[in-house]
Amino acid sequence: MLSSRKWVSSTELLRVTKQKYFDRRIRELRDELGYDIETGFQDGEPHYRLRSNTRKATKIRTYLGAAEKKLLLQSAQSCALCGVKFSESKKPVFDHRIPLIRGGNGELSNYQLLCHECNNQKRSQCRGCSLECAKCYLAFPEKFPKALMLRIDTKENLERLELAAKAANLSIEAYCLKIIFDRS
Image 1 (cartoon, rainbow, N blue to C red):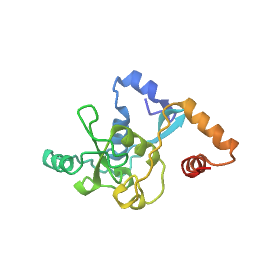
Image 2 (image 1 turned 135 degrees about the vertical axis):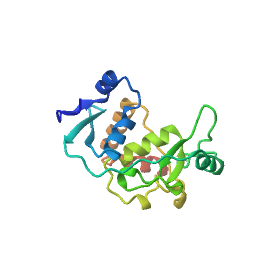
Image 3 (image 1 turned 90 degrees about the horizontal axis):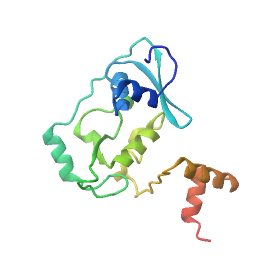
Image 4 (image 1 turned 180 degrees about the horizontal axis):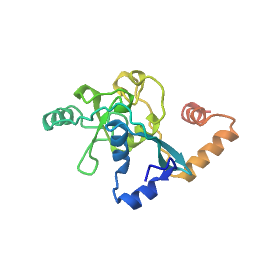
């Protein structure tokens, strides 16, 4: 399906593969098997395509063992980014601080516990990022003052935010900071 170098939507991949978490399979194909798969967005939906039939060097994904997972779970009862407490309904995600695709490894020190929402947000923000992971709040939040995690829950809310920022002649980031810190 990804052999024609044409973009394939996540909806189409879900229909064909009937596999809900195909984004993980795409990462495995890219990271572990070396396929040159590009990820992008079209009309707000993830799309994928095979850029080349030439396979790159592979990096085998390793997984935490039960003892290592237990150590992490004992050390953190809340999300490293937003601070939400973990519970039966809010289970932690074992996140690579530095993603494998950016040179991260499977060692225990490269993991942190995040809630599902922060893990998705981090993945989205890391996609295509070229900044140094070791200096990033999303990878090492304990090295920074607590940050504000802003989640836009619908496309309509994002559009409203974009319009308000444009009307104020500010970037979205600058507009949000103005709203948060401008008390006038």
